[in-house]
Figure 1 (cartoon, helix red, strand yellow):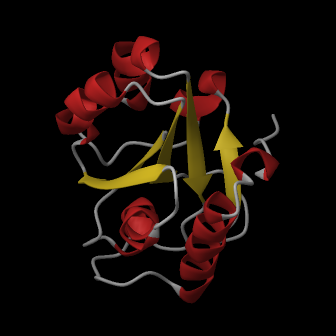
Figure 2 (spheres, one colour; figure 1 turned 30 degrees about the vertical axis):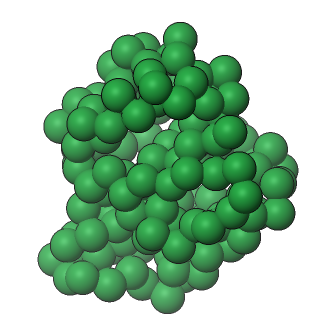
Length: 147
């Protein structure tokens, strides 16, 4: 069984990309949670489920075109402008890492973080493409963010 945590603030435009993926993912073998800006409130889910894979999806400034999707390596998480939530992702991963077979962070490049309740077209397209990859069992085909 696999879990997906979508995190971000959907009231800040593209920062809601992870929330969008969580709300639109329906796939056999997956449970998805829209964690808002407090993914630490969902740690008990991981501890109970002990998933083979936990995918954390967030808007990440990677310096790529809007809507680009990348796996963010653990050593790059703090460098990438992830941070509209209350607990740093590195702390969250350290706390729950032993309860999941693997934990990966998938970033979606935002176009704007303005106060609005909708995703930009490019980010919506990237988020929908990510959800499709997950439904197809192709999560490991997501490119890794290069140095």
